[in-house]
Image (cartoon, rainbow, N blue to C red; front, top):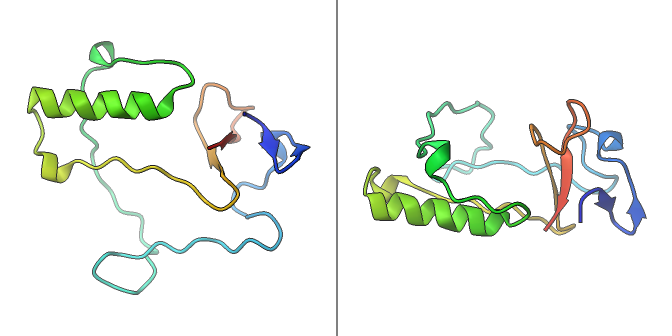
Length: 113
């Protein structure tokens, strides 16, 4: 459900952008070849098919990703060994995502997973 935080309804814009809830540590990103936290922003150029060729179902993000992966595999445009799908989750089963159509202003939308 959108906009719920724990059992208390909270506006996504009231959730701090860079701070976790009290008592929850910030996650650290680690490079696969090192135990050193990743502090440098990596740049990449994602490859994706044209928007009008994508299958999209509102409110079914996992299915949309599955269909995107299926498209990439069946069209043999990109080396599969270079393609990854990442599913993000945590103990609270909710994540903030910015630049969503449902966002309040410039803030994130808090999605429950």
